[in-house]
Image 1 (cartoon, one colour):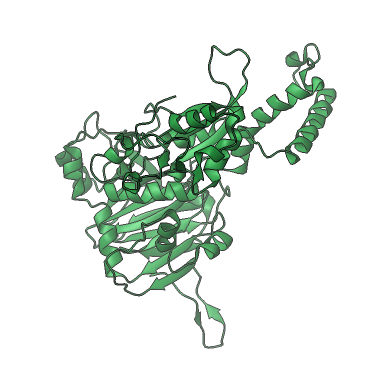
Image 2 (cartoon, rainbow, N blue to C red; image 1 turned 120 degrees about the vertical axis):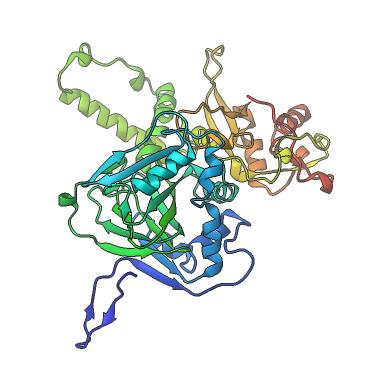
Length: 477
């Protein structure tokens, strides 16, 4: 257990404070987490810490440890992933490297023990028992429904991709050497116990993963042991290592991670190209050629530096007066690569046609709002040489769960494009809980009718209550 601050005999505090920690008493009720909404889930995940407190005091700043004495929650956590699940998963065709890594930390270095090709459970279990190797299972939400349900809600909550990895480590063993990650990390302890050591960041809010040598990181700033039902959060860049204490069967935890490449710097890189493109259309100075042989120079000239500085100040002034920031890739990438909405069964409610299409007298609303993004950008049609701005609607209703966060797997963007003249009408639909088709800000009835019938995947005709939960198959862009 982590050491706590206790009054010493002289009234002074003694012992280190590992990080903010909260003790929870056993809780009753059928559902330990509130899965009714994204915000409800996150509130219950970090309870009793309030979300306002979390983002004000801990997010991107320091670790948070929540230790729970809650048998119901511990049982629920254990159901998310167990060592015993590996046998059935291996029978579905898992491969080393892609789905599973086998490794062990030896003398401060990571030793990878992967075989070639398909994972066979008996060999995996042999390496686990005899070589005391850690089993890392990549992106289990592809196969475990409850993790899909949790991570889909968290992607809605954060507006960022949410991945996960399961780590199963035998007793008296450690899988990974000290390192830091480029993601915000939430650890859920599922089985057994895990001894953690956290160190002050060498690179705060790091943008990449990196190993750290023991002699560089110093003594742990926080040290504690997680038990089933406990939760640990720490910011990207936090150096950490963890081992399973001796005398136990094994430890299983799931690392849920988010906010990779989601910094202000990333957003600036994503939007600056569109801002420059628009400004150059209106300002002839930006369209003027650079000096002869500038690209042949070893160092940037003082003239070029002053010119670029002036352009940046001009862009900043223009930015102050606009509300239409063009996201070149981040919005589209998020919609393309995130999880589809959680469903039970075959997902027919996401793709089966149902109900009549809305007409002029219909009232419509946006459905699955959290799974839809709207952005403005140049026309991506290669046959259109004018490159006029278009409005793009991307959604994740038809995304593939089995390729989520797998990196090199091909993904496809699902959505539609509209003329820029439709932007006000689209915003009306976006900002309203329900709106009459005839009240849309478009010139003709034909345009209004065409708009609401062209993307039935996210619009629902409220005329028939029975059909409110159905979505017709969305035409692909």
